[in-house]
Length: 433
Image (cartoon, rainbow, N blue to C red; front, side, top):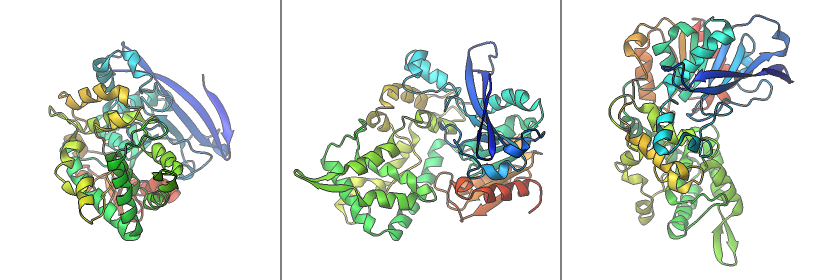
């Protein structure tokens, strides 16, 4: 059953689909997918081409827009848009600490989650495309991890695509997770250095918070254990358009004076727990490194292992000197499954996923080299989340792909830049620029 309703300037229709859990076993277990169709109010009766949006993540449901926000307004000028909750996210048979125990123990949960990578998401798209478009190819817009999925789409089912637009999401075709994080730590160090250059007063503020956390056991109101490593991971903000400013405002109200002495303020703790909790997107933590698995090597907590190669991120060493505390971000660590109450029940499941050695390739370099689908990609010059060198190497490997390399935006450029970003990329797919 579909339900339609209105918001300013748009008509929305909630759509539900049933797909196999394992597309290689179409007669086996099924899961449900949810997607929201959006069309401009004055185009409801028109026969429009389709654009399907693949959200960044992994682990996040599609954006819940109100009306024609961000890039959506531009898309609605010529498309019907399908905002897909990728499997395991949003309303699409969610996978979390509450639902995964239905599968059984950690081993069964880990086996189940092997079906939640880009290859399965693309096959979901192909399964529902036939129902949505009647078999006609559609345009895909892939943001961040959605871009990774789009490159998998081009590798495995290019016949389903009329065009592809990628924003901040060109993955390395070959890099192991270790390579990804070696590049990532250098990027986040640059972002942290730039933050302190903008807000030099934050050097002492961050050091003071880190010192407090090294000497006090702090548990946030939601049960999250705030360690110094967890505090450092707030650097994930630094890859967003307003992230540096938001981090600054967070740090400036960290402490209050109490009868027992200085303490972390309730306001600070409330905001921090919202930023650090994985309750709303646990798949991000569970399969984040698995999205880089493509061979017999385990990911084996790559971000945690590689961090040891960068001693400048060690908080105790930073505080022993007079230098700034470096933030981290865009990485998942085993201690998160101890600190976060939303992840604690899934610790063993995560360990089993980190140890797997049977990951299958997600990309087909030969097929990408012969690509015939019009493709355009926004590459952000110093993207904190996706390595620019990796992205440009992949861009050169995909036949006909046109890039727009810019330092005007951070990783969330398609949202922050609104219609202008999508307009530029669609023009590139049509050789209009």
